[in-house]
Amino acid sequence: MKKKILVAGLIAMLSTASVMPVFAREGAIAWGGSSTNAAETDGHWVANRDGSWSFVSNQNGAPVKGWIVNQHQWYFIGDNGRMVTGWQFLNKCWYYFSTQKVENQPVGSLYVNKVTPDGYRVDSNGIWIR
Image (tube, rainbow, N blue to C red):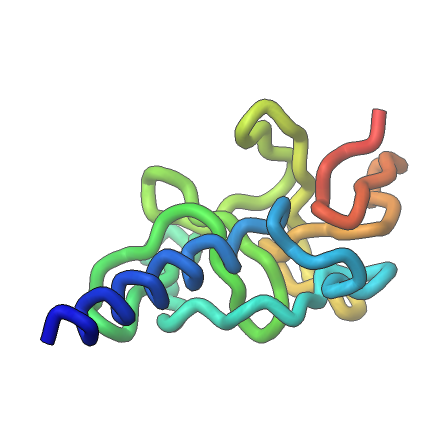
C-alpha cells in the first residue's frame, strides 16, 4: 500500500513539472507555434457568462489555475480561474497569449518561437526576447 502511495505521489510530482514551459525539453515545442509534446492537463474548458473561459479538472470539478496544456497548446489560468490573453508578466518574465484565433494559434494559447502581433519575438519557452 505504501508503495502505491509513493508511486502515485511521484507521478503527481512529475506531472506537475511537465506542465511548466520552462521545463519543456529542447525541441519539444515546434517552431512557429505553441504546439508541445508535454502531457495534457486532465480537464475541460467551460465558458463563463462574461465570455471568458475557465479550465475545470475532470477529477474533482474544481477550476484549474496556473499553466495547463490542452490539445498540445500551452495556456495560463489566472488566480481568478480565467484563461489569460495578451501580454502577461508571470514569474518575472513577459509572455504573450493569443487574443484571437489565428492559424495554429487558438485564443489564449501561448506564443512560442515566433513574433507576436505587435512585433516582439518570444523564445522556445514563450518568454519575450529583449
